[in-house]
Length: 225
Length: 225
Image (cartoon, rainbow over all chains, first blue to last red; front, side, top):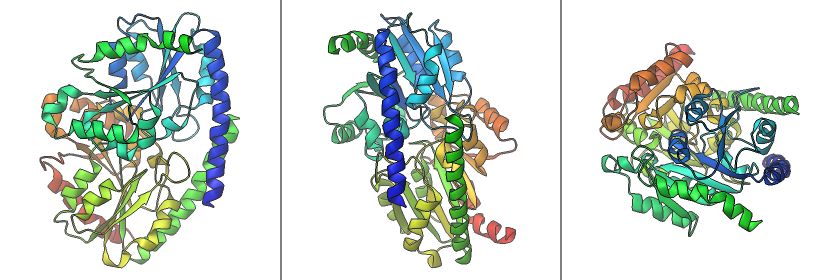
């Protein structure tokens, strides 16, 4: 029974990867670099994007994934950045992640000729988004210090899957019992050499470095092609 | 394609419900009431349990669900409460929720004759755990104020599925920009009349009320039978 289930899941992931490659080809054809932004619910993805997209040196667009509603898309559209909403809630209680086929369905609505960088804000979840490639060039995760220092050990795949880990809400450290050194050691344990940045979307601390990293993604992707 | 996918999911949920009823029958036969405890990663489920199980008026056990590791089970076992670990990480990147069949596989390891209340601590996730009944009598979710006031609108099924919503980490409110009145209004919008409690697992504020609620679950279940 268990073995059957795993095979079904692996088939689904295989189909997903095929569609992710087709997405990637479409993005490449338009010269658009793509970043997949992931985190637990409430870790601060949208707030960080509000900060980092403001003054970004390349033309960016956002594909906003949510189970329900368009709260985050509404916030980001105030920045005069093209935002496309993708809801996963149709059919039953809602998908807990974006997959390649959902992103594919949104491609016709994306202004690919007007942007250099597409940021896909995934559904808030530390498990399944890490399992489904959507055609991205790079993956970023946001981990809030309020979540505690043990999260890399409890959700290792997510922390391993990302090129950049943003440790957010560092302005709250004085009010928490969190051990940030231990958090970074746990990250190093599951993803040795992982790039990380300490940031606060509220105060703006560290956001310049993140904005610079984001602005360099299109050039890095072109150089690697 | 989409319709096919939904039907597969509905079949899976149907099978899940059948197994959940079998679990429920087993729990009933042993006179054990069961609570399914859910939240986003890092919202404070384990810390709240540490507080609430200490001095609880009924005999409790814990079934601890995690993608990987036994960090939370190790913490709870210090309370001299029977703790059983269930990891969802086998096979591929890890399941993002407990389902009825996973819980069923753990039943032989549970000391059902020695407890009145079983608390099932689910995987940290605000989407799929709400879709999968596991044989529980009641569902509790923990929402941390650090996650922001919009979460009921973004993850409505989770906030609707629960008999009790614990708003945790209220000791941090002075250091956040969160609008707790708005959070409670959003909860009321998706789940009118929902029971909620404001708590701080760190300071212990509000935990007595939660402990009393938890202690009354077995009697409530017996009265409803």
